[in-house]
Structures are given as structure tokens and as C-alpha cells.
Image: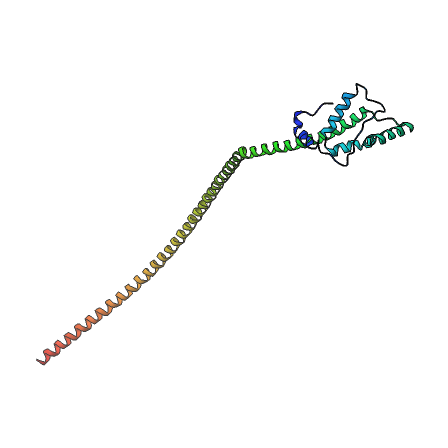
Length: 246
């Protein structure tokens, strides 16, 4: 059985703090084999004892409460009596190897649990450190990239919108210019028609006026000649009457 490595220093510190603490719930334990230990079993028993001294009382209590080991919690006389009862009933004795296996399983379980917990803590710490570093180093760059990409996208969209609006505006201007030209042509044609009609009416009225003026002038000439002849006759008559009177 290998002793705890340097990676389990915290575990040893925790267990060593409970090594010298005595619990009233744990009674003096006597390991018996029905006879004195052989010389080859002494180092093994010492090793088992050292392993159990390293463990906390709760774990030792769990080990000693295992099936087949509970009798080890009794006193010397009670242990011997229990061992005799086991012998008489045909039950086999608990050997040091079995105790060592139980202790080894419990120690391995305890170490695995603590090691798993430490691995989880270390993994969480590593992940948190990596995430913090990623946020500190990559977040500004990512934000710049996102902002640059968004700016480029909006600029391209704005350029496309401007081109579309410009094309639409040019089309509207062309349509408006065409409509104005058509309206102007219609107005010019209508004005020309109106002018031609007015000119025709003026020419007709001018002809009628010329005819009327000719008639009026003829009448005026007639009456003027008639008045002149009448006036000459009157003057002649007056002259004759004056001569007669002389």
C-alpha cells in the first residue's frame, strides 16, 4: 500500500489535525489473531496502524463498523470471547490482510473523493482564469471586429440606398421633365390655335370695319357735296338779292 503523495498535503494536514484527538465513541481496539503476531506480520500491522492514525475518527469508525471487523471494537476479553464464538460457530477469523484491504478501500475512497473535489476546484479555477483572460484579451478585439463589421455593413447599405434613391430621383426628374415638356407643347399648341382664331376674327372684323368705313366715307362725301352745293346756292341767292336791291 503506497503512502499518500505530496499532492495530498492538504489531506494529510486535515487528517493529522485529528490524529491526536480522542473520541469517547471509539473504544480501545485490540487486534488479535488468537495467538501472538508472527514476525512477518508485525510490519504489516504497524503499517495498518499508521494508516488508521492518519485518518479522521469518522473514517476510522466507518472502517471498523464494516462487516467482520465490528468485533475489533470490543475489549480484549470481549474480543477473545467473540473470536471463540466465531470459532465454535464455524465462522472464520478476520485476518490482518482483510483489515488491510478494508482500510485500503476506505483510504482509497476517501482519497479519491478528496482528489476528485480538488480536481473539480482546480478545473473550475483554470476555466475561470481562461475565461477571464479571454474576456480581457479577446473581448476588445471582438468588440472592434463587431463594430467594424457593423460599420462596414451600414456603410455599404447606406451607399446602396443612396444609389437606389439617386436612380429613383433621376427617374422622377426625367418623368417630370417629360411631363412638363408635353404640357408645354400642349399649351403652345393651344395658344397658337387661340392666336390663329383671334387673328381670323380680327381679319374678319377688319374687313367688316373697312366696308363700314367706306360706306360711311361715301355717305360723308355725299352729304359734304350736297352741303357744299346748298351753301353755294344760298350764297348765290343772297348775292343776287343784294344786287337786285341795289
